[in-house]
Image (tube, rainbow, N blue to C red; front, side, top):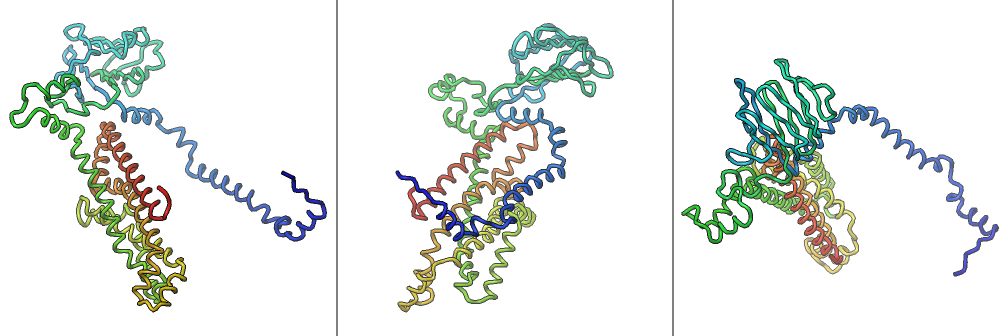
Length: 446
């Protein structure tokens, strides 16, 4: 391939012909660097205005790591209370069934306990008058008085004191908090506790082989139904995970998004013809319809949900109404702009053969805008599946309300993770369905 060679004379001629390109004014040449500098200055200003360095320095990053761990693991929380020169074992939240007896708690005497965190090198020995923390094989006696617990001499790095409480951190597997009245233990397990059956279920604690034997050939547990049906009932009505209720709330969220989007699309479609100036030559009708769209979309969906929850009470109706109002405004805006930018030649062609006004719109306008309008509706439907979760958190029903209830307990983060994964799966499915349908509507291969 031969190279293109430009002589000095030709280069001078090009510069003369296109002087505006090669000899831009100085203020135009500085536009890009000034824009970059202004953006950086704005970012620095925002950082100083919100005092981001202090915010990041004072952030409780350790709490964030605990919350993340709570999504994929859980804690057993026994308490060893000092009462009348004895130690009484209590369970704050027993997810191990009635009268739990885990292998990491060993009774070494009438009122003596040893709690093991992974191995014998990391333990806490508890007796009525003595608490010894074993860290990496080294034994540390924790002094306890009426004022509280105190750090021992030469305390290791994983031992801390706050408010008369000594905390021994054994990493992911758990920690022990020593007070003058009790020793509070957190022992962490991977996975979700009792996901299939709660502690009150006859199937609780069964391994896979025992479960299969029970439902296939075992003695009938409940005379009203076979064992396989009882197993399904026990799973769906699990008191800790509430699978049936969660799935019903998820279906309610999907229905809210679908109904709200569908009602908005049906309601707004004729209105965009009134709002479009090239379709309806009436300035007053155009202006009033567009201002209606502005009003509906200027108020956020979450605010509409709060308004309707106050009017109708908690449930899916406020959610459907909030989606309907917001989507009516937004679809009206985008649909009107689509109409005002159509190719008038098709409409004029239909009109030239003597078609009636309705026929002109039917054959000259709707074929142009319908694929785009339906594509927008499908996008809003997919987006509203996510939005319905948020508005559900303020009382508009659906899985959002269930999600916020689990968050408020500050203990059921594994339930939160479960519902988030279900929401992600639904959003992923509907996103793919919506993309496939949109691609077909606008004439491209899926």
